[in-house]
Every structure is written in C-alpha cells, then in structure tokens.
Image (tube, rainbow, N blue to C red; front, side, top):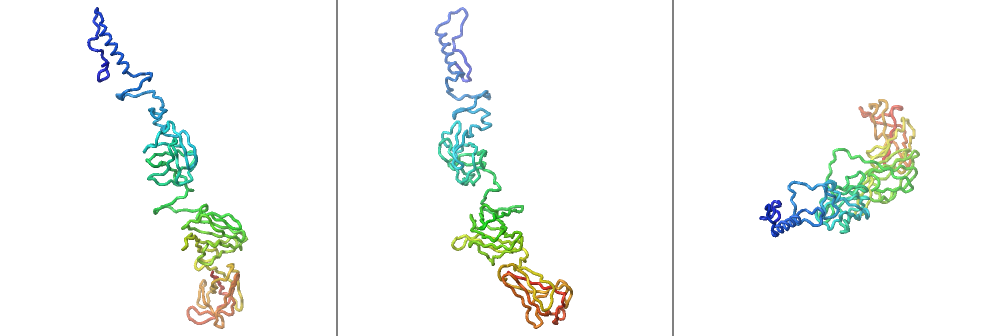
Length: 408
C-alpha cells in the first residue's frame, strides 16, 4: 500500500536504487505503480472526484469556505451566524394563507425543522396557514398547540421564527399583547395597579348607534335634540359599564330607548342644561337566550343618590301661601315630601334642624301636590311640636324655610 495507517507514504520494499547498478524494470514499475496509487488516493484540488471516506481534520479547520447554496452543501461560519439559510427568500399569498420560498428549498417537512419568514400583513383569523416550498399548507399555532390570536403575526416587517413539530407550524415569537387587541382570560387575573378605562362619546344622530366592540365599556351621549338610542351591535354577554346621558347647553331633551334596554326602575334623565344622568348597564341573556341590556340609574345631577330625589328650597315660610317649582321629571313623581328647615332657633330647634310631617292650623297635613312638570305646597299656618316640651306651637315667620323633596 502506498500509505501506512497514519497516512505517511513509503516506497515499496526493495525498490531503493543502488549506485552504479542497473535499475530493474520490475522495481521501477513497482515504484511508478505505487506513486500512481498514492496520487489517486490524495486530495484532488480540482474536485473532479469525491471523497471516498470521512476526513478527520486533526484539530485543523477548512478556510476560505464558500457559502453553501444547495441542500447538500456545507455552510460557512457567516451563514451559520446569520442563519440566512433558514430565512425565506420570498413570501407571498395572503395574510392568512402564506406561501414561503427558501433557497435551498426544503425537500420535506421534518419534525423540529426551524425557519424564519418576514410577514407582509397581520393575520386576521385564528388558523392562518403557511405553505413551505410547495410542500403543503400547515396551520400556524402557538406553544403547546394553542390557536394564535388575531394579530399574533404583527404585520409587515414581523420576522416570524417558526419550528415544525411534526403536525403544525409553531410560531415562537408571536407579537406582544397590544393595548388595542382583544384578549380572553380563562383564569383569574391579579393586577397590582388600578385599571383605568376611557369613555367613548357616541356620535350624535337622530338614532344613536352603539357598537359595543368598537366603543369602550363606558359611553357618553350628549343630547343636542331629543334622540333615540338604537339597537346596539356586537353585544357581548356579561359586558358591563356606565352609560352617561348629558344635556347640551340648551337642555330639555329626551332619549327614547330601543326595546332591548330593560330599566330596573323608571328610565328618566335630568333635563337641565349640561346636566348628566349616569346609568349602570350589563348585557345579560333572558330565558330564551336573547340578549337584553339592564339599566339602573346610579346618579343624576341635582338629585340625591339615595331614593333618587331632587330637593328644592322653596324659600321662607309665610302663612296662607302657595309655593311651587319645576321638577323636570317629565312625569308624575312617585312621592312629594315637605320639610321645614330651621334658619333661626325656634320652638326648641336649633338652626340647621329639620322638622318633617308638619301640620296646618286645622291639624290636617300641609298639602303638597305635583303634576308631570311642577311640584308645590299649599300652606295655612304651620303647627309643629316643641322639641323639648312636646307642646304644639305655630312656627315663627322668617325662621324657617320650606323644603320640598321630589322622588322619582
């Protein structure tokens, strides 16, 4: 053999030349044959023949290595560092049916194969697909095989890092949760800071539209005329928030509700200029699985939050007089209640005290009345019980104001 086990070449035994001695043809031919075999077994720098066995490098390195271009080529270190061989050279198709081309092309889907592509648009479905080099479309999913959310592929310029798990394409770097993306939580969430929501003002129209997906949970209506609140779109069972109805600078406007709204108490809004009425709402389903929106009045400007009343100070008491005020409910109130507010000490009462259930000189109750717009009181001479002696006394004129509470 021309080389020993360590790869060192040695001439055949007995072929060494002797001075002044004729070279035997057999010895000469043996050396030539041995050299020919050794050269044949050496590295062919022109690359006209392949290696026939693995080549140990003995700790040395190949230098000046060109960039691999075919599937069977070796990459150079620059290619390995940049992983350019795993990045698609072309991406086409649609946002939810992506096609990607690689160079060199993948010959088959293989479990754990990894690649990248640069997206051209955000996904709009939860089951987008990608077709690699015409090998067939595969669904793109997240870790553990979970469906992607809309927008997990963020859009143009998003470099998507993927791995094939043997069934689906797993997107390793789905887009961070954006503030404008819908999220569904299936477990309890704990937040260490307040959650602040915005309020959306619904566009003014004869019939006001309310897209419950597009608006925030809290919405405002500013009335510039009497309006209708139409059937909301995209109602989500369980959604809740505030509905604030506000008058413009003129005031006096009404709001008619679509039949989908179910007021837990009589629906009424404050009608004074710029006045606001706040309702809590929640979307629920009735016994037929039909969505309805429950409304409950929480606060109305100028009225107490307890019992939903509005209080009017009708002025100083005077005998044989009638006092009245506009209550602006637009309907008969459920109750009108009269009180006296002490402004100067009288009959054992101190300034700031109030007396309820007062009577007239004839011992009958003082007459309070109301219609759909106005409430008032007819007063003769008012009799009250002394705070300390329990005797009956006429109140002193000029020391008491007449207070009227109008309840919804």
